[in-house]
Length: 166
Image (cartoon, rainbow, N blue to C red; front, side, top):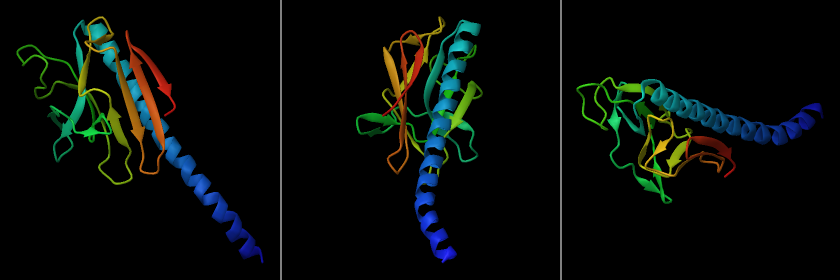
């Protein structure tokens, strides 16, 4: 009887537990994305030079190879499937194009079926030397899992970052 009662309790507890774990994974990724965007702002202000934010194209050894020129569209938004790359142009390099070793930080997405998807409203953007968005009014990041869980981050002019429900 005790085993039967324990089985019934577990049948209700396990789905609730797994849902809570999935929500925590999405919240952790949104938090890491928020920190990455604050880093972009700080580096732009500190060096008085724009910071570029794009969909990272990773090599097999997980080093950034550059940016995807045009990330694929999914539901009207860009799918940044491998994560986010922050980079800043160096002297002698090509302007506004990633050259080797210009990466400031990479926020990778794990390439597993359980990994969340990152959808972004723009293919790439810049944080200007004044610390605000450059050439766009807002950027929306949506992190979602295959179970329908979703978290959003909205970045608006000048560089206001807000977490929003989906």
